[in-house]
Length: 267
Image (cartoon, rainbow, N blue to C red):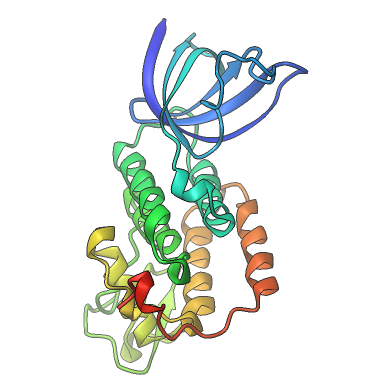
């Protein structure tokens, strides 16, 4: 059967001297694996259409009970130039794609997850450089919700009471924050960190107020989100891009973020 679909190229790897396999997350069919014959040749008909972090239109031949389908056409719809011109943005976009791959089985359609992925990547193109990690946090929160694991951040996950000021307990196993009466297990987070994560969880990118973002909370927010995903999606593949991001951030020796310069638009 011949299929035409829109999709995001999330990764690729060598199949032979002249061909490659690409993983594409599609709106209609979820994640598919396609063999692109001749894609590694200099004058391949696929051109740059199979580069990771590329939104494209694809035609492939689908056979039932086969993990690998045969690609016949690939046309670029959008190449995310704002990401590919910046090293840090490429690193975070790669983490989004790597996470998408690790969280999803083949051919498991999820239109909401597809839309959330594109929203995060488009935001990553334009977000101020000082806040380039925020779209990844947004994606982790929204992707968890799209997969049925939305963390509860608006109050106590057990009794719904308002969580206290100061520090708050966050339990991945229980799925959210706890008030002092209901327990203190899990990671301790500053209330400001919880408030910003909840803000990300309930806003579209264009409506996010970045003034709540501070790099001094990055480590605890990053750890909380990763621990949450590790608990609720335990059999997912290791997200190798996270290791690279950790090395990148350590090498940069980032100082606490006190707000981006005025021309970058963080207010």
